[in-house]
Amino acid sequence: MYRIGEFSKICRVPVSALRYYSDIGLLPPVATDPSSGYRYYEAGQLPRLNRILALKDLGLSLDEIGSILDNDLSAAELRGMLRLKQAEMSRAVAEQQAQLDRVESRLRLIESEGEMSDYEIVLKEIDAQHVLSLREIAPEPSHVGTMIGDGFAALMPAGIMPTAPCFSLYHDPEFKPDHIDVEIAYPVPADVTTAPQTPAGRSFGHRIVPGGKMAVTIHQAGYDTIDQAYGALGKWLEANGLGMAGPPQEAYLTAPDDPGGPITEIRIPVE
Image (cartoon, rainbow, N blue to C red; front, side, top):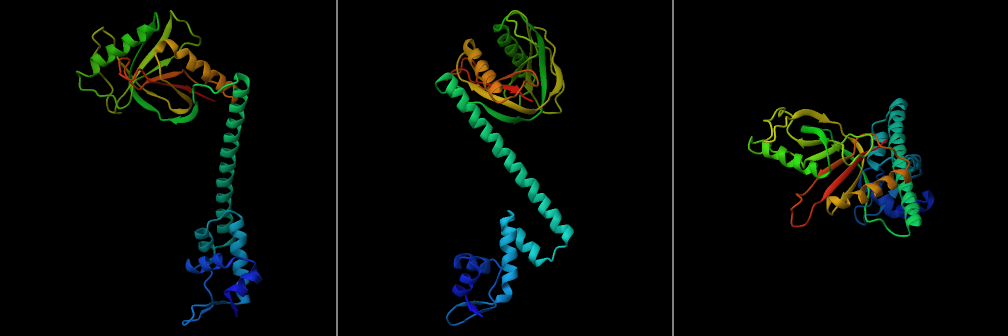
């Protein structure tokens, strides 16, 4: 038998690792001196240790390795576990590559503009939402605020409380400041499908606004400068090789008269 230090030299594994493997039951010593506490190993344990090291090198956790060694898994079961690990590692590599691509695109933007953008843009997975909505052609951008207020004037007296900030969707294939196809969406519980007409005589529709991956930024200023945020989003999409996959959305996180000023989350579905 070998004392733990001698066994460490033979197998080229640190004593600290051998002690840890012993403590978690993965590779207990064959004997322990009750008076000194010395741990003793034998050469017959080397195959098990080598298998632990080989499986650890494949990315398996010590818990997974213990399950493999102690439950005498079949070749098919081991193959299935390794395929799951392969898929997990592939996803991690893809996520790292996507992060690297975003770093490279940010560097290109900084180099082209010579400074950092005022807008931080991230990709978010946005959930689908049940909404009551108003849709019409707005003759000017300020008309959107009128629609929002009219909708709240009908919902609040009826006791219908939105479950999230209301948001607008812009359905036009191109921007026309005097002909804006806009939909104002008020997120509501799934069982709320109707509401009274608004004071201005508008009627609500009910639908589910699809979710999905979206490029998102925050505009913390008045609506008269919101074009700057859209411009930053457009540059970011181009730099990252992404295209629009649906109507842009503006979620109104604060009211226009909020003491801190309006805060708008702009979302663009991407593909």
